[in-house]
View: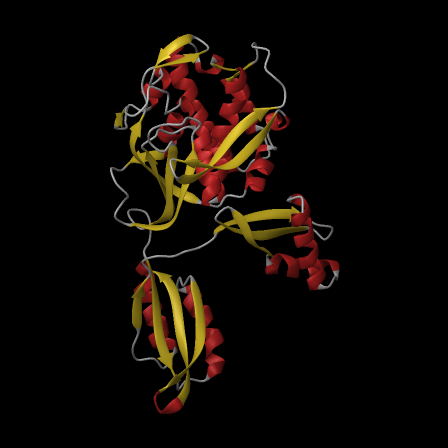
Length: 395
């Protein structure tokens, strides 16, 4: 499964984790589009810029309010919960957003002696919290992250000004949320870990002293904090495939075939996919004595190795297989986005690498079905889907 490892040597905040996600490959346009599904979507704009922190390139995200607060605005947890529940966000985003907010509201209520429904998020903090928490859930969903690991957390030290006056660092809510995580403070008398950042960890993360052994690294990204410190004020996010508990290891089985009727391959493909193959392909090759042949390759989860081998031996003329472990993959971040065209709904596969969209393709089966239903050329349906998606991105 896809996973992230967060190194909090300079703490963690909502804008730091969002900045890291953006550098890791989540398109800013997607994050902004999803946030607009909330009633507060017109209250703010995201200021996103590339910055340097002690020689490390990072992405800094700032929430800019379109109207200055008067000093009296606040939103209760109950209001925020209803806002998220009634939004057009998908169920996974709602679930994670609500779980993070519930943990944050619960500790605030405990500290200030309030019922969780009556906990208030004041002024800028209310909008910031919504953007940071829902934004993190949006990014996790986009990147299909199944596990979150975190290092020891640097909380910072000193005191911070808040709505209730001066508070020690870590703030009481932060300290409560991080009870299960190893913490320390170093390098700055500032609030390095915020309650929002701590709530995200409390809800989603498990502690790992170092990068897990079965973690295949794909991308390393940095989200910037606001302060200038002696150390790089960044959150380092390592993105990859976690092959530990709960994640299946993948292998490739290969075999060379030079004496089989090629008409059988279609049937063999169907049998392999039915047995659990993730992908199947053939490659034209030349064998000894210049005999033309096919190399049959199958990508699969290791637990299906025996079933796949049985299909190959039973349905082809192969008498020997090669098994190759897949130890690392480099891939674009992928996401399915649905668009409404004049022909009907089409799912588009969107791929991004290093923060930029590199590929958009309309799903063939969706387009084929609509072309048949509407008696329209298939190419026109595909072209219309891509056109609508481009318009969504403002292109």
